[in-house]
Length: 422
Image (cartoon, rainbow, N blue to C red):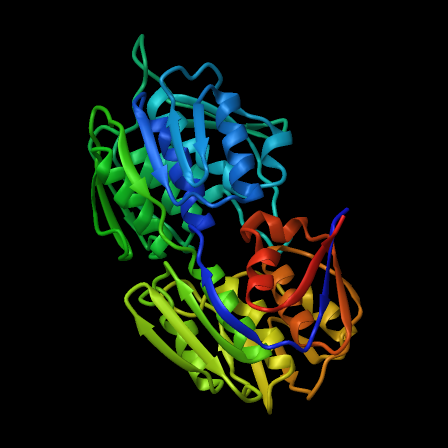
């Protein structure tokens, strides 16, 4: 099992290119199932989750050509309508093949998903939405079996009004993809507003879909008979952007992010400025300078456009060495404080009560051997290792490779003393 070894105490300086967004790439890869024409994608990140999704799509019959960040997918000859457990168990996003398969082929069998153990993320919203659109669904032997009944032939989903009682990003994405080929108009209410949902909508529109309202809480999709091929460039990863900015704010120094977007990072940038960082934005670049110890900042997570849950752990690492005390409230996932125990091993002073953590900043953390528990907790521990005195060794970094493209190479280019131990 691979580990990361970090010698802390070095400020970060230099420039880093931000990769394509994992959370946009995964549903957009699944969108290839909606047409038999080639879908050409650019800026696709080199991540374990992306590789897993490509493998799953290939098992379904999608032909895929990869040239660096350029990926061409052709789903002209799908010969399997099942996503098996061994593919789905490591990546919850595999549920995103369900909507496209049912929409185009009127049937799918998808294993109930796995992924990070950060809390309950039920798929019942996906199921209820497809049922409202006319699909018959049975849960059997750990699989979701969905089928659209037809009158002596192929069935077709019907447009419907669907209200999400909880905001669900993957639920919104799955049903938006399914609705593109449905008969009639589908309205998704209390839909997720995340930029990654908007990026998927842009790709689907380029493929011929009729979608209005993406980025608001009401999305209207008018179904069409077929979609066609298109070209689309994946948006930059806002969570990778935020992670590098927090790392520089915690460790000190001066860094510039290129090929990123500041307009989807408003809450993160405001909190970093509150912590004392100087931030400048110019086009697709963001620069951050931090020459002093950060100030502690309070954080409360909520669905976009509020503060993202995927940045909570990174800010907790920064708060651990900040001046003053801060409160972090997690409202999205009930089990997303698993990194707290590992931060305590480095000397962080953190108390947890329910969904609230109180962090009393200390002047110095001390290196130790720690263990990553999920994707964003891994990034949190890397940041803590960058500021801790001595060597920090992070075990189980396969979580990290699911969502950060070549993170140790990028940090090394910024001056960090970090290496991978095989």
